[in-house]
Amino acid sequence: MSRRSEIAAEAAGPTIVAGEILVEIMATEQGLGFLEPLALMGPYPSGAPAIFIDQVAKLGGGAGIVACVGRDDFGTINLERLKRDGVDISAVSVSDRFPTGSAFVRYRPDGGRDFVYNIAESAAGQIRLTPEARQLADGAGHLHVMGSTLSVAGLKEIVAYAAKAVRGRGGSTSFDPNVRKELIDGADGALLAALVDDADLLLPSGDELLAAAGVNDEKEAVAALIARGVGEI
Image (cartoon, helix red, strand yellow):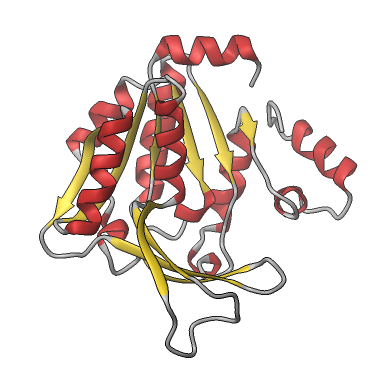
């Protein structure tokens, strides 16, 4: 997406995202997983879509999120952070039944990370295409989708509706295919491929570029994705 198209998208309406809002709780020591009692720090407001859209707002762009949190302290610290930074949270539902999602994180000695998620059985897994979500999408100029959210049951309907609404306003889309290994079994491969093909801007990290293209060479992967219609990588 060029600077000109970025300006056009912002003129058409705010950037929106749909997905998980979590708290992140981190182990203070490096190691492998959570197989023994550990010192932890947190909770920190988190969730890839929430982090992304918060940064959009802090940079001065219009920003909104479709999500769900629990009626608890974890939900409160997330909503307060988003509101403070200027994100439209009118399409964030608050569940009286499900707690706010969580991610326990521990860094391995090699720099990698192990996660223990509660998404599907938390408020984060209860995202739906509500009237508030439709209203937010109807006024949006750009839709950003995170691969980490592909395991959430209600995402497909929300993305389909929002993408159509954004495209109808002359807006654009971007896709970050950050599917975590702990969540990949729940991901919809056909939806992932469709999101890649529709993206004006693709934001892969490391081997995600090769996985998105289905080839093992970086140069070939870029050429294949551009040929499929991706605007920029």
